Length: 99
Image 1 (cartoon, rainbow, N blue to C red):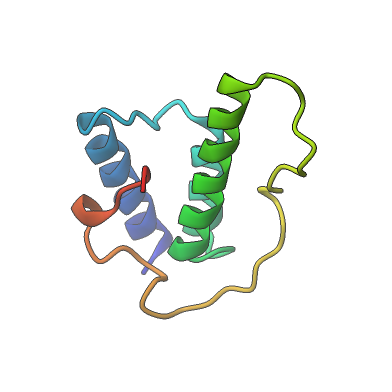
Image 2: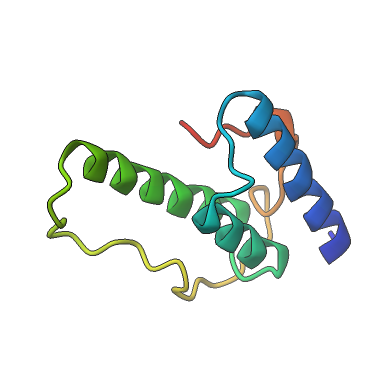
């Protein structure tokens, strides 16, 4: 999948998530992870795992604003690039960032 194709896929994901009431277009963490996926630094499964971790940390901070003792996920951590069934989205509509 070309970089342009990956950018188009992310744009469709942003639109579908917004329509589903989960806006990510202005979410810096999501956009950072999306750029890493676009440039093949991480696969889609890793992007989803990291974003879910970010969302969970946000939920924890919302209910308990004290500093967490856990280390927050490092969105810049290196991950080996893996092509395979999870390296792209089989369909944007089936991709749920809130799972």
